[in-house]
Image (tube, rainbow, N blue to C red; front, side, top):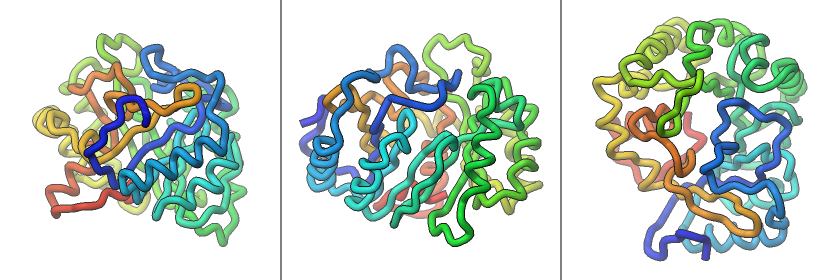
Length: 294
């Protein structure tokens, strides 16, 4: 049994961290926060991980899996066999490694702006590496490839430059997620209040109107992020009810308080999945959450 595991709960979707190793070290990455239950040493071996994931899939009836790291493509052996266990799969990647052609699988590629902006956050040369990866995607590649940008106070005025950079690429769309701060976060990335964040949210709403063919955020999910609505969503966080987060700590999985870790400030949450599910629940009652539904 994983640490903190519930015996009675059923989760149709899960998020699994399969490695803490990464080809980048992004300044805003929640995996590297000290309070998160992550240890880059003594990782669980592949046979053990596949056996554990198979057990969890059966116990909880998990249909949809989101694969994350670190950089999950550093463990292709896990992905090739592990994605066979679930009906749908989404792999999140920083875009520095070539994508694998896998059945029942889509990709989310992280990118945070034009070359100068992205590289200042994710590391020198990372923008060029991402664009090369996108350029090498075959025309007959079956997986859907979505890019995702983490909106922060640092890049909020430069988001349109990124949209224009991606318009001519192979990607099937772009989503914006908003930086999730830690409690007492004083970094350059946080707005410090929902009211101040509204400037960035309204900019993404403007871009959604201007570029509806590429920006995949639901307009309603963006409206729910505004200060007047946000707390009504985060006070009833749906991912905590329906999605099982699995973080890798040595040779075991642990379940943190939130998929963003144990130290998050929920009042200032801007996670795409939180507000996307809230918008969906307004539209229709749903029983199954598909993490690759953008």
